[in-house]
Every structure is written in C-alpha cells, then in structure tokens.
Length: 81
Length: 181
Image 1 (cartoon, rainbow over the protein chains, first blue to last red):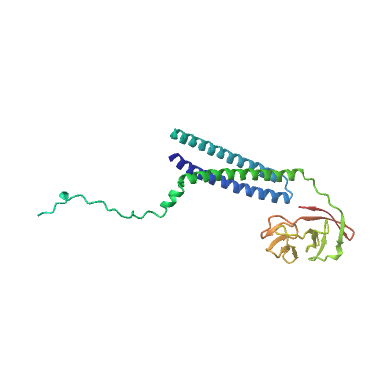
Image 2: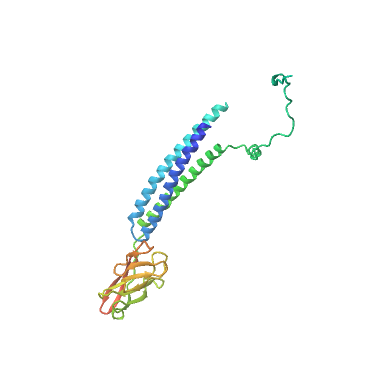
C-alpha cells in the first residue's frame, strides 16, 4: 500500500507535467495553423518538431509509469504467494 | 460497611442494539475499494489517455506542416478592377478578386497611393471598412484595426494581416494580379 501511495503521488506529478505538455502542444497546433494561413510555411515544421519533442518526453514518462506499475503488481503477487 | 469497588461483581455486559455505525460503513462493505487504490488506477489510466492525446496532437501538427510544404503556390488571374480616376484621395471602392466570392477593397491614401486588400477580417471574417481620417481599415464586429498602407494589424483581436492584392496600373486602368497573404 505504501508503494501505491507513492505511485499515486508520482502519477499526480506526471499527470501535471503531461497535462501542461498537452496544453503547449495544443497551442503549437493553433500557431501552426495560423502560420500556414498567413503563408509562413516553415513555422508549422518547427511547431511539429517541438510537438514531437514534447510527445517523446510524455512517452518517456508513460514508460516510467508503466514500469513502476509492473513493479508494484509483481510485489503484490509476491505478497499473495 | 465501606463500599469497595474491587469487591463488587463485574457488571454484566449490556446486551442491546449495536452502537450506531458510520453511515458510510455500509458503503464500504458494498464497495470494498480503497480510495488509494482507486486514485492509483484512475491516474494511471489518465496518464495513458493524455499521452495518447499528445501523440494525436503531434500527428495533426505534422499533417499541417506537410500540407504547408506540399501545397503549391496558387496562381491568380489578371483582372481589371477599376479606373484609377474613380478613386479619390481618401476614397475607397469595393471589388471582388480572385473569384466573385472574395470581396476586396481598393483605396487611395492621402498621398495618392493606391492599395488593395481583402475585405475579409482575419479575425472572424467580418467586412472591414476604410477610415481615411485614422489611416486604418476598421472591422466593426470586434474593433480590429489594420493599417491602410500595409494591411498589418494595428490594434484589436486579429493576429494576421489582411491579404494584400497586388496591383498594376496601366494608364487609367487598375489591374489585380495576385494575392499576398
């Protein structure tokens, strides 16, 4: 249960980070569309690269969350045995 | 006779109705899920969901970038829009270019220079009007102001300039040749 409590705190922190990243990605998408309509073709490329970097960071955090979760489940199974 | 508490027989336990329990106790019996475990699972699932959303946003932004790179520059027809003498200094005239669905405004500034812009505000597509005294094109819907010399945003909610219509003067005739966004 202590691990789960730690996990809940960890997931809350990650949720905030990922949530902020998604908001920034939304802003990047809006900026890319606006730039495209204004005829600036290079801006959407930069926005897409920045969005990809944020997605990779989010993916890394998710992988960490999943590995943490796997570890907790394994610990729970070991306790039951 | 002195009263000695220790010597008295132990009081019989009172048998009666059970003391009142917490009203949530029955809930805890019916739904034996702990808050901690519940928070743990919902936050893990929300993390997955947000990361999926993040991936979709990357895809959409990349699609916008590809459209920008692949789309070919549009070609515009050449069309006579007005006679130059028909527009007095400070005056304006409406025309449609490049299609009949695209309202534009031709204006002459105080120095006698001709300018033409799309009449559609880049904020929410209302029609802009010329205010020669303030040297601006004004959008009455949300009070957007554009420079009548450059078409750039001077004030208000618009974030993009008005598309400029490229003009060519041949004698007294004004020809539209293209659109610069």
